[in-house]
Image (cartoon, rainbow, N blue to C red):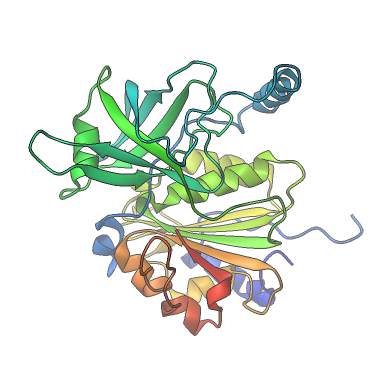
Length: 332
């Protein structure tokens, strides 16, 4: 079964929690809440490279054939002692009332970013006479995209980097460094993963999901649980809908809104124990992994917070109550 046998409860959940119909696995033969999602998110940013649109697979195959002849493309970010690189802001696109997409040009048109899955970049700026501001973001432009990276950034009232980015205009520059390794992914590393995200914490989840479904050799099953304040705050929804439509037996998404519109048929309130108990793979399942990324309040409620970027801290919150072990959970 894709998730737990407790999908016996799926019918009532369709009315109360779920935003999209669940597909079943084929047979072998054939409010605490507005605050919760608006207080700063973890490493963020995001994409607009629609690999899943028609023709992208063919483009990728062509690129791989070209690479076999000419060698792998040059990487813009190589980590280690490379230091910060200044990138030119090429374009800015408004996504909603507090979120923009930023397209930065890589130093050379034929370069790829050099990002691994999963990893992030550090951004830095410094006003004269002040300490530098450094923040991590996860680009969700495709790792194979040449000549650019894309960030999706939500502006937070007291966020110095998000405010700086939202004030930028094309032609200005920003410093980047990376990649900063997070959870190293390889095809079929886990049989089933769950992505629990709040707000702009969705971006490392998209990076991971895109890599899985882009690779025809990777058969990992993925469940997404994504909480937001309002419907317009759901970032990358079209990309995830494409995945649901293309891989209905391997990918499922559940959306939860704190302030839903009247016609909303998905989850209402915040991500809670009942929902997670129903849709996540069981703790006793073999080879599963639960990923969590979002604002501090969500971490506290779902999994407990990290001690530092290199220390995951102890598991607590809902996931511990449901019986998951520390080794089964990764906090971005």
